[in-house]
Image 1 (cartoon, rainbow, N blue to C red):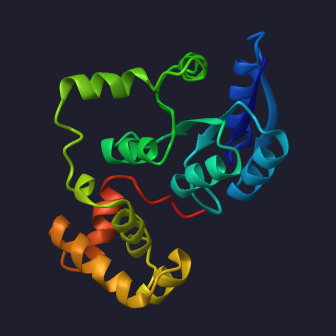
Image 2 (image 1 turned 180 degrees about the horizontal axis):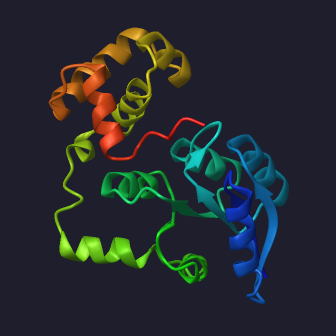
Length: 211
């Protein structure tokens, strides 16, 4: 029996996925969470085999949460559930440690297929994402892929409206280092201001909607 934690801030979505998952004799939803804080607590308590994670949560983006949950319990697998289907968003989730990505526009049964595939050691993408990658083999060639891991973190925080001083505090680095990363990533992206970074992140669906 595989234990699963569902993380989505919409109760009706959680209930629908829970009913679907528990129709399978070897899958068991042990906890439902509506926020990032709830998810961390549930993973710490249950040590689940798998987390089905929505990326748009009321208390922050699910992207950094992926790494946080894996730091809490490294043996868990994470399958992302999201309305965002942009390639940069998918690539970033996988880079941070997700084992699968299922968009909310596909048939619900694909979630179960994804859970099973991931538990068998595969990396799973829903059918619409697989088709898009097949139709556009160069879709992953995005300027954001030129950024280092730290530059990506700085990019997302600056794009989300953080001041360099706040970025330094959140990442535990010096403010001068933030400015160095800022100059480097803006050069790689051809950006002239934080507004350009915001637009890039918004166009790619990398910022969680407010609320």
